[in-house]
Length: 113
Image 1: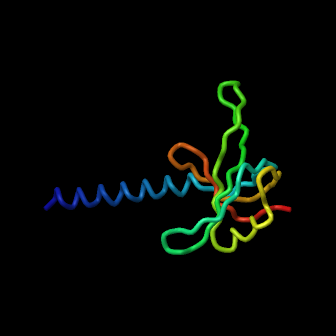
Image 2: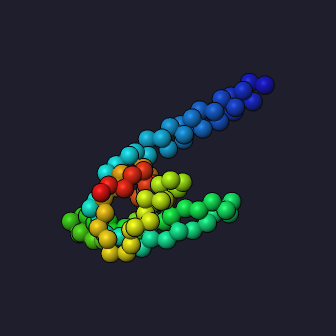
Image 3: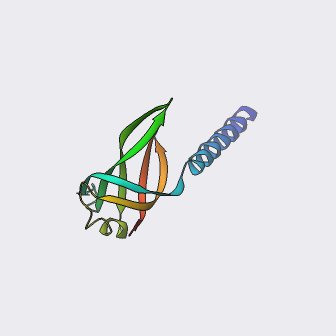
């Protein structure tokens, strides 16, 4: 019985730790101005529409500067803000920044004019 309680307690602590780390990795940030590579509207498996924009982000690693394409997802009312945005535009925005599989990704909060 003691082993079972210890196992359950360890699982709960592990879950809380993982959840806490996930919360720390997300933050609202201002991005831009950045170049837009592409913008598209899609439909998920539930029939809900969303937008995905790819932006060009300048990065620096060990003194080497390079460009990387980074996804920006927009759901609900946020996707409507991208209606007038097209490839080649320079934009700034506020987004929830997350680390996903070792790479940055953003969820659009507000497009800045």
